[in-house]
Amino acid sequence: MKIKVDLSPQYFEKEIVIHADKNDDEVKQILHSLKEIETKFHSLNGYLDDTVYSLQLTDILFFETNDRNVYAHTKKNAFLIHYRLYELEENLPDNFLRVSKSCILNTDEILSLTHSVTGNVVKFRDTYKQIYVSRRFLKNLKIKLNQRKV
Image 1 (cartoon, rainbow, N blue to C red):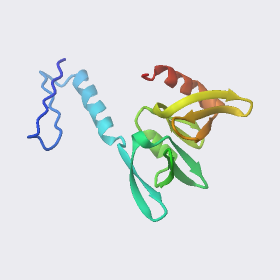
Image 2: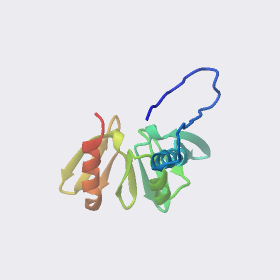
Image 3: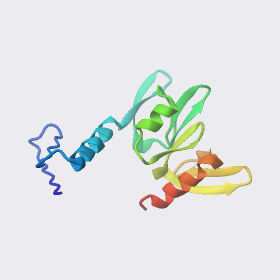
């Protein structure tokens, strides 16, 4: 399989073209993967008081439920999100991982994972915010941390 990228300011939108001699399993797998990418979230609307903010997923540390509401936590704020955790879990990229019944975190933003008497604590870069990881989800988090790019 050959992959070519043609970048030019004359293009107004991205286009993917597949040239193949037949519609085999490889072509079907490529199409399936592309459709999955297309349906994933790239940004979300977050609400803080009466203002709507467009949040980039790279800025979000974790999502957390509190009083039946879901909040997206950045380094400085917590924004109300109009999605349920299960909807986020299905549509977020692979760097987001469920770590408790009420929390999904961005594994790219983790500074440390510490085991303490009160539980397993995740601390994030450049912020005071931290969350607890459920024992049930700890193994998956450790696997994900070992796989991530440094």
